[in-house]
Image 1 (cartoon, helix red, strand yellow):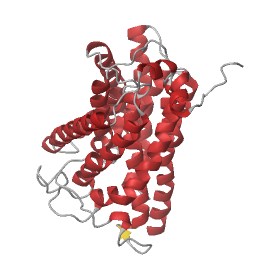
Image 2 (cartoon, one colour):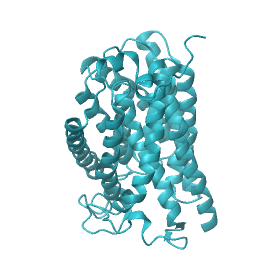
Image 3 (spheres, one colour):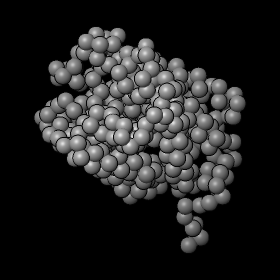
Image 4 (cartoon, helix red, strand yellow):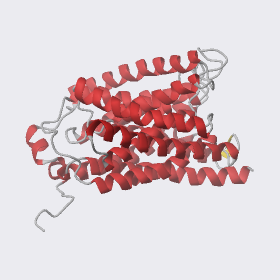
Length: 393
């Protein structure tokens, strides 16, 4: 099975990269106005490049190095020091495990893009994302997946935090960072216009759905029945959440939108992520069905009650979804309440504090927000001198 495991994780690595390029880029790009679509695509593409380099330089070592104390992995594996084609991580070539985890390090900061589109400086985006991945994301990976303080035998006892593919590690951390940046940046000048291209949104969501097979199924790190079940329950949760989001939207507002339905898909995918290696199809159906309604209500709370302009609802969909799926593991009897709730609290506090510190420091050094004229005319022309569409034809 060693060869089969390697072959499957090679495929899974490609699928997870597909989630960011072009999946997330198109999903987010379609949701903004036409004058800002290229800036969103640029953010996603540039972050994929930057995170790849930083993961090689130090991110992988911080997350999966052999450091002691449970806090971080140290710097012993910087630039893949000591890793060659014969090195193994379980049954996999370690360089493949590095590449698979690199795609997670790419998509997690890219998820945050949805909170600040249409108003954040490109320099701030790159600086914040790079520092955040190294200082926030990579240590949390070590705590839960790298044998650190939140894993089995850590601060929460023999059974630590259960997070199969990233409910806490990816979705909660990104959701919290998104909420922090949305608050610090303030609302856009004009929030009135709808998504400029719902077709892009659908295509992007569909690519994310397909890529999630690698995200969750690949997290089994083996070509076996566990991977197959993770894929099956991932699909069921996504389908259920798509339908319940659309149904709840119709009940409350009289219409069920295309954008709403595919956003429900992402809510179902985020919610099943931490549970996908532990639950069966019926439990996945329950998680997805609740997630569609829960995350839609979270959108209304963030937008309408709290008046926070998390532009593309990153916290409501990813943050709330990831936390919900994590807690559901305890409710369904697959994990301890202490471990799950404790993990959410510890990581939540850490991600909030680190995100605030990085943002405030960079705001003082670089500034966070584009000037008002750039925001009104659009980031595409101002930042890259390009337009997505020929407005004269």
